Image 1: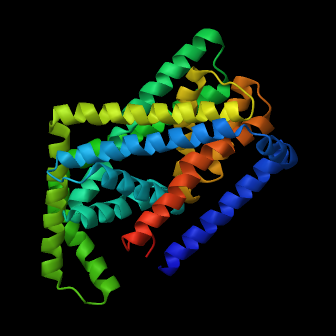
Image 2: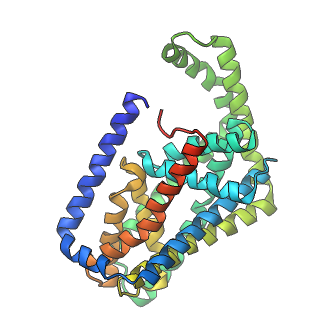
Image 3: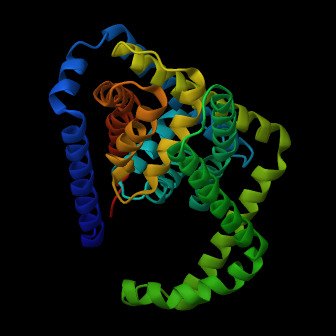
Length: 339
């Protein structure tokens, strides 16, 4: 593991611990522990089960995307690979930035496809997950607005989500529009830096040619995914199924601590709280929990300690379960998340 990666992981982990500590102090750690100790084990088990349904749905989503790239992997393998990708997201700062390269490596190992093909596959999954999430936010907030006034906090969260997604979409559009320019110029810019880091281990001309070929194949694969309409529809449907499985898991987590939460609130709470996953903390740990509490307390009127307990149960299924299972997967395949 490189020193820079170690330092980033250490600082992110310390920040996560600090945020969680502050959250527990504010909501009352003793009350949270008491609520968790009396949680209904049946609903806790249901939370874990629906979290696994989410992983399966998005694992099948990855398999469908790879199918459009002529990469065939068994169902169980696609699920395990996606679990490995979530593991990488959850243990590296800035989430997807760490998960996608590891997932691409996992895909290339289990299917013997090119690395850039695996990268195109997992990148497509991440981008396509945005469409159903925004739809759920607008549906949930729209219904909520018919029952109560939309407060400043919720309005700010929705506006932030729209702005962030809009920025990402714009960036993707610009990259796609000028992909030919990137293919022709980026390798020449990157090669000298790689040469310095590698201390002359690679021939510059060969390295530049390899980078150009990889970029060309990457963009070609992305185009193939986007033009396969039948598979694209199936991918979006599986993405929506995964989001709904998370929603049911969160409702089960609240039921475990003795509270009910309206389904329409869950629909927009999950995508909005997940925005905190863009923080430097590993997998958004600490930030996402705090975001849920800050968002749900004024909306639901439930005590902050009860919401914190429910969120911890939920994150047990959506954060810690993939960490354990994904750690086993990546270790078994000999893939390291941080180098």
